[in-house]
Length: 412
Image (cartoon, rainbow, N blue to C red; front, top):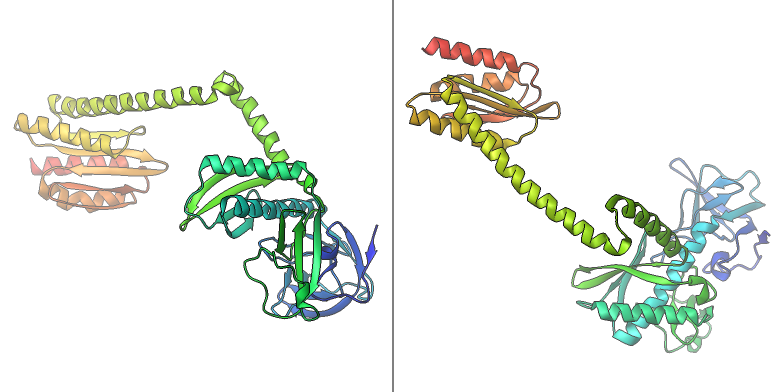
């Protein structure tokens, strides 16, 4: 059913705020102005909520054309970003993305309820909140919240939901009757300008200034769940899910649990223990691998010296810089013990390139270091008898080996 806009519309209160359940509205273009890539259109009324109060804007269409953005200008006008002005400005139909709208209604009302009970029961004032795509967060102006208190708060919130308390919207014109504004209003500050103040009341729980869209009864929230906490600038940030978001999350968690049952080959109650065992095994195997790789590096370095090589040339794809350094040290130690002199060219791959080390007589390293880096399409540096760097490609690695052999022949 399409609702028609009233000819007596208060510009401060939109149709989406008067009745958040309205899904379509027939209205007229009031004004429009060009903007980059299209136009900004102001209608006589709108069911598309402009971003505000921690709540993102609605999504929807105008005569079937998707609206790019809905926002309230500093002067109070609500503007809709469109590619062009509607064909018939005197008769346009606005449609809201109901799935997104109802999700925002559930999360926003849940935030009001959580904030109200956190303040009244635990003296935890809400500094700010955010309605994200996946999670909602509330920043409580307290240094910490215990898990016990958080669990108790969750129980209290869900108890209020089970009681199916009504949620009502009140509009008070402060320029006509300031005395009509209830005294017990929770707010981060009332507006200083005269006009309409919109109040959201959760029966027997809370009365709060708000511009957002809300459910009409707490039962529509179904349930809330706190899913995380973290410190934030001296406060505590609590993440939560409510309503359909929580239902979808539970489905996701359930599917993940089934897959983990198969992967870990155990029941869900044993997942933590199984994951802990696997993690411990990985740590033990990593330590064993580290020791074996060190032993291998020492063996490679010492073997090259025992075999009487003047040039130790090693390239591997399964090692890191520590392997090269250990190999180089083992080879140099063995060479010193045998009173011989070595040239070492060691490298390993990382993708198309990798890293390398060149060690040897200082004069040879100084003369060939930059040439080696150029042949490997890389760069590097060093001092004394060591030059190391990063290679862009090892396609010409054989040329490096021939260069070093030539240097050894010329110096012998």
